[in-house]
Picture 1 (cartoon, rainbow, N blue to C red):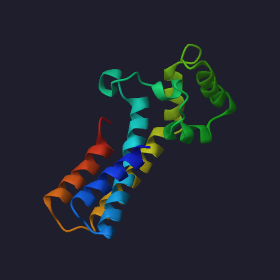
Picture 2: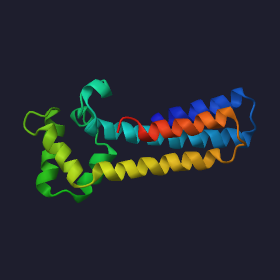
Picture 3: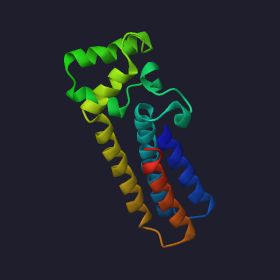
Length: 155
């Protein structure tokens, strides 16, 4: 959803600026890749940030039944007992029987965060590559800066 929203916004910006069809498509693709990176970083922050920074409780995605990429990557390498811990949180919709710290340790131990961060950087790299199709301008400079902000926000 986030990638689609970013794509629509960047494409609409191109349309409002009366850009040609090819530029509209490139900016739409830029936005989609930037949105994917943004969402992945958001998913990472759900495991790594603090509530005061995130604006919501950490670990909230799993508590709400959302299995995001850092956890998916960890589950690929997890033992049956570790998978059972995740299943318990999903069934309970809370961390009363399995602590968030235990889930965080599982994600860390199986490089879920590192792998998801690498994937987010692939999306920002693709965004930057797409911007290279445009001539230098203040708008292009701002869009390049946006890719940096997305990739490196609140590590």
